[in-house]
Length: 111
Length: 365
Image (cartoon, rainbow over the protein chains, first blue to last red):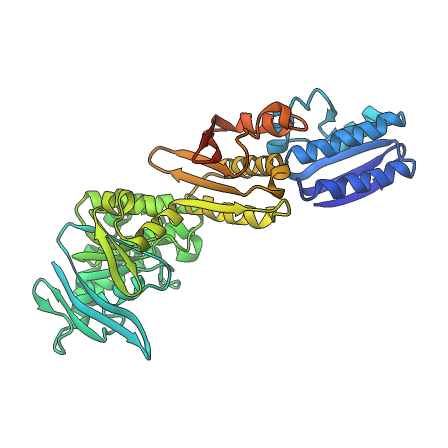
């Protein structure tokens, strides 16, 4: 998994590529926790380059939501598609997360 | 048709074929299976005289082909070979690849050779590619051209040396379909292959080679369902299934994924099914993780092309307990994913072990 961040006007855009699984989810959690601890409260997570997610990845996203809720923050997911979307649907996560079809739409949703 | 007696082959001090005795009858399809490096390809190459045997005899229709006076070119025409790496002439078109041998070696006229070539290209589904060059074709198409080229010489027997080993899984089926068709039409064939379901379906007889010998031979049912000898049994079990023992919570998920992907590739499973299987395995390993400090988990994956059943069996030591029972799980996310990707889940306590059996869905869009 590669994780890149950039700060747009009002949100941190997190771009993940590769797999979000039992091996990589702890690293994702660590990086997100650091960003939230540094004061970031508004996130867009771009899944365009993610080709695999397991329940470990879903748990990392739940943790992110929990940390943000405690600080009054928000997250919107973008480009959740294919196999990844299928796993979200199996676990009812499409109703749990706000999801948009592009990063631009996700940023707009958080504005 | 072919009688092989006490055939041996040495490369320097290395004995590759020790003592091979068997025969291949007209119309018979014989698959040669076994671990790598046990002399399967060398046996084919000796039959075609691409390698000169060190000892023994090979008779074709009663004629000893190892006799000094034997016309090797004529023998090769009777017994043509299809190679793993296609071996097409890249500077010649598909049509020219097919007509070169019949014109030069059989003295056929160009129009007759072209008519025959077109007929054979139709047989392998590639008539429209007659004017193309090999580089313009996929690997599967090139191998089908190689088979057509082989047929153009009107051989009495075709020797296939791992004809699908160099192909992507998506292309393997198209080549196997052509070989199946030849088998139905009564072509005599000897096939070295690692495609076990194919060997089981297409062959009249299977030779299991090990340590330079025909270690066991029989009908596909005898070899694949009821192998009698220990090495054959071990090989068949290893080929038709994937087993991994996990005895620590610090297992290497990616190493296991790579092995499972290699198994799926051998079984020609679609990408979606592979992805689903990897996901089920990861979820199960996460569920079993707390047990792995004290228990040992054996995970076995088996696939039958005939029934299209992809099964995953987890056998673990320890007290009788179903690891999937909800009160044992930290949350139900993993279980939800597993349930979505499986047709059935069965838990039993058998022979002092917890046994969970999953039937993986293989028809998800």
